[in-house]
Amino acid sequence: MKVSHWLIPLALATAWPIQSLQAQTQEASTQAPKLVVSIVVDQMRADYLTRFEDLYTGGIQTLMSEGESFINAHYSHAPTYTGPGHATIYTGTDPRFHGIIANDWYDASLKRSVYCVEDDQVTPVGSSSDAHRRSPKNIRSTTWTDELEWATQGKAKVIAFSIKDRGAICAAGHYGDAAYWIDSDAGFVTSSHYMDDLPKWMMRFNRSNAPSSYMTGSWDRLLDVSHYDALAGPDQSDFERVPKGAKSAAFPYDLKAMQSAYNGAFKSTPAGNTLLVDAALVAVKAEGLGQDDITDVLAISFSATDYLGHAMGPRSQEVMDMYLRLDLDLKHLFESLDLLVGKGNYLVTFTADHGASDNPMQAKADGFPAELWAPADLEAELRVLMHQAGIDNDKVLNLSNDQIYLSSREQNLAVAVRNAILGHPAIAEAWTWEEIRLSPDPYAQLRRNGSDKRSGQVFYALKPGHLAYGPTGTTHGSGYHYDSHVPLIFMGKAFNPQAMHNERAYIRDMAPTLSKVIGIASPSACTGNPLWVSPANK
Ligand SMILES: [Zn+2]
Image 1: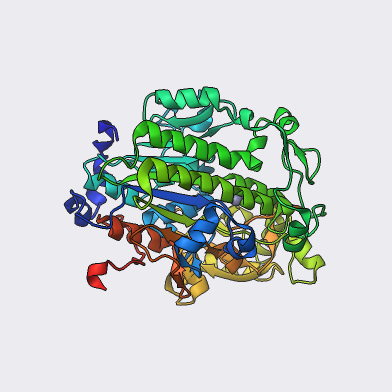
Image 2: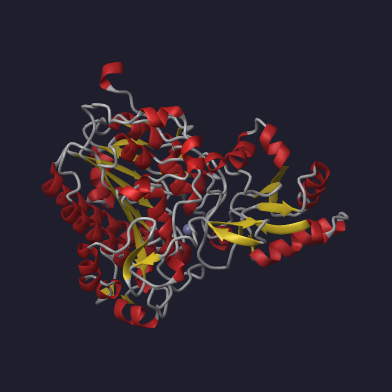
């Protein structure tokens, strides 16, 4: 934590509730760990835990056998994307209050789309690319990692890693020491929000562990093909997209050739996960994480699972193999932390930012109700319906994130648009902004939780299994079970090993749970509930 971070913009400082300011010291908590290891696996569906359970022998197996599991954990907002998911994990609230309503959203005043962690007031560090002008300024609430910094006078060390900038930035919050993300050429980079120069250990790491250095040899199945045929189906399918840089969508993959063809190819391979674990362990040693009684934080968001998941879908042998290899990377991480920090001295949280749908054409071929629209076609067809209903095209500013931005908040216009688009066969439901505000319907509430003043005036949900996407691979974003249901496991001495909870839990409950275990205030806009009861109150 560098001192300048404490020069908080006045508006933000005064907006924080009194409770944050009062929590100036980390309350003595006998349960507080020396280190919290916060793991997010991008696009990990909850069923990846159970489907491959018998084949996990490493870190995922340890989490499942030694951790306390909430097997019915969901997001309480829609749309479900990486930015909103990570912000919810760390702020303990929905986009309604943390403000990260999507990865990108339309800004009517700027007349353009804005990216959730863009910030032209900061400069890149470790690279000269403007693509790394990134900060957490769009996150409207504190994170539990911010509250930890407040409570320890900035003495807690909070360091976050991800391939994606937003995966690291949401974890480090406003006042964390560092968020590192990947530039395909330069390696790990950050921005002037956090520091002026990369630390020496990170410069050394970037020299010795360039992303391309991980792309050697071939990537083939870890286990016998029979396991994959049984749990994922055939390797070759019409519903997979060739990963960028590869020549086909089948094992084995020539990693060096892939990387030569495309410098970001490592992002869609297991190398993208191994790279993060290696960097994180160097940080633990170099920064002395978990070496004193003040709780530190190591956050890792594994992004390769999302890049590969988008290309291949949940029923691919490649995605299955990546999880089996992530299991081994996590084994290496936990065994190393046992030595560096001490078994029992660190707490692990394990979750995902969203799930993923099946490929609609694959589902349809198997007889399931599913349909696919090219995104541009869906928008054009919705615009035709609105035009036919007498709505002037000039009044429809933008369609994005299952929302329609209109030229005014006039209720009659929103109702007319809602009625018009309900005529489209892909659309299951549509609501005006007024309706999602007032409706007790849980699906309207998902949209309410997922929206704020940055959102449009009309909201819609496609039917289950329906996607606006390309013909191969898959995506996520709905409020349905396949996108909202994710793993949620806590492992550490404060939790009950092997306890399994069936009742519904929400990912927004993670931050207040950790706040309670550590003994700090919950984030400023927290709406979740602690899932942990201190032994004294049992
Ligand atoms: Zn994604």
